[in-house]
Amino acid sequence: MMPTLHIIDSHVHIWDPRVQRMPWLDAVPAVNRPIGIDELEREFASIPGVHLDGAIYVEVDETDPEQEDRLLYENDSPLIIGRTLRSRVSPYMRIPVLATAIREPLHSNEIQRARIQDPLFLAGLEVLADRQLPFEVVNREEDLPAVLGLLEKVPQETVILNHMGNVSHLTRRGRYALQGLSELPNLYVKISGDNPIDLETAKFVSDVFSPRRIMFASNFPMVNVTGSLESHLRRVRSVFGDDPLVFSQNALRAYGVRVPALPAVKPAQRPRRKEQSCY
Image 1: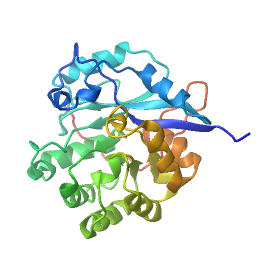
Image 2 (image 1 turned 90 degrees about the vertical axis):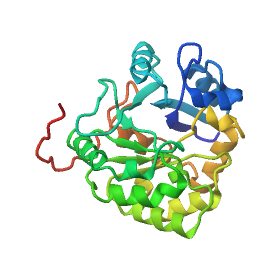
Image 3 (image 1 turned 90 degrees about the horizontal axis):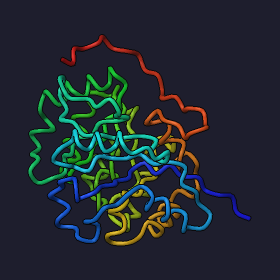
Image 4 (image 1 turned 60 degrees about the vertical axis):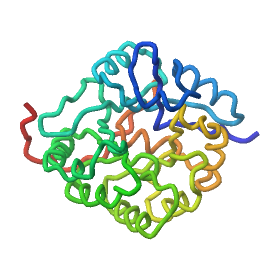
């Protein structure tokens, strides 16, 4: 009998459009309905030889982030072991008490590259670094070089790059940016995005990133819009095998979380900088 592959899914969305307002969801009718963590659990349970140990919730670009915080507070599912919540990054940003990480969406057409180059954005990342709170970056593919330029200025921050930088096809520009990002000491990358993911990009990530800084992510339920979670998992395994670093341990380390009844995996300790005001 083959051993079970234990998975921490590092990128999961759940929502209820009956009470939450997410205008972007109107353009995706296939998933414009209430979706809970139990649905993710059932999907993994239907795949032979795997077990979902836990999941990291990622914010859903709701118009009312504080309502999203409340809904996550009220959701007591033991499968949700980490919560990436939304805030506009600055030295005086709102940091939800429940947050395991912070994300500010940078991938919509309304977000200009000037936001990435905003000095307040950089100052906010420095505050997150001081508080040892990871930042998740989700960007347009064409903005990846600008993201690299920003993150090079705050290498002490733990950064989690969503969806392989949204690189859908590996170009010279994308190759250069991913190579540069791989040289940042505290940057992790999620293997997710389009379904199917681009295998050339995934193999390049495998080549240039340390195995300790790559993590599996489903992007549920969006993964089912153009394919299935099972087919995405199969494609990721074709590149990374069943490496426990990729499928569970790196997510535990990056977010500083644990599976219930298992010991915590402590995040890497870095020298503390002088505390900055966040008022």
